[in-house]
Length: 313
Image (cartoon, rainbow, N blue to C red; front, side, top):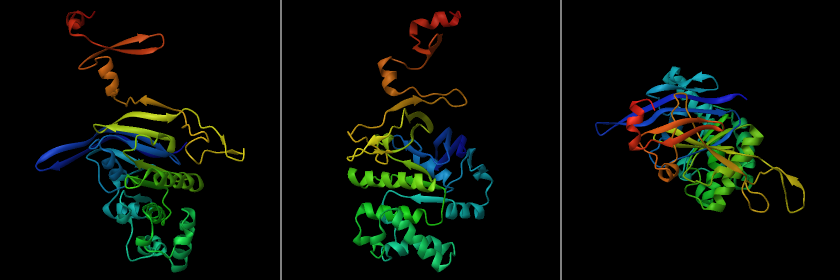
């Protein structure tokens, strides 16, 4: 499968109040074309910084980001502007940030195409198609104040796709929405992902995002820490007994898709052992690696092991 995004040794350092803050510390990540990826982690872990770098809103301090095989660090400012305008769709947490309040839904969707100097007929047709795609064709003439929060966010998705990007970056797109409306937004993402072949990256604090996407990566201290993948994607039966693909992330009986969380080891051999395991097995400072028939064991190195370690025992 083709890789849409490759991050290699990504480092980003900011200067805040005269101090250096390291937001990304050698982060490595690969996203396949057509993948729907969730990115989670605590505040300050580097999630939004990663999105800003991939979206061309910020340049890395070190390392590189390849998008469709092109190194963003080699782009001039003018080329980077074109990249942001035509190849990336952006979606923000607060719906109002994406919309002009005095324009109708259709006019809002047309706006990016006006900036890109698309012909009027093309703009109108594209806007109508996108509003239909997000289920809001009948709301095309309504201004944002006449739309619910979820409807505003779906209009914002249409705006993000106006210039036909292959990559959509969504930063906390459901943070202001209730759970039922949030599910509608995720279903919209999935439908567009499947019908348009759209690659979607979603930054979220929602730890229950795994059933909604293909894969979840957790970022901690500026690195990818763990990865949650779907063990299997099954078909389920709807109320009429017909087999359906899981366009709804839950099975008909309400049970989620089966998934498994894996610890990520980067190219330098670095891994982050989950805090729950460190506490349970009292792992801190140093560990002992032991080869075993079933794989590699990680054991805590006790203080009494110092002499043995010096002797090579």
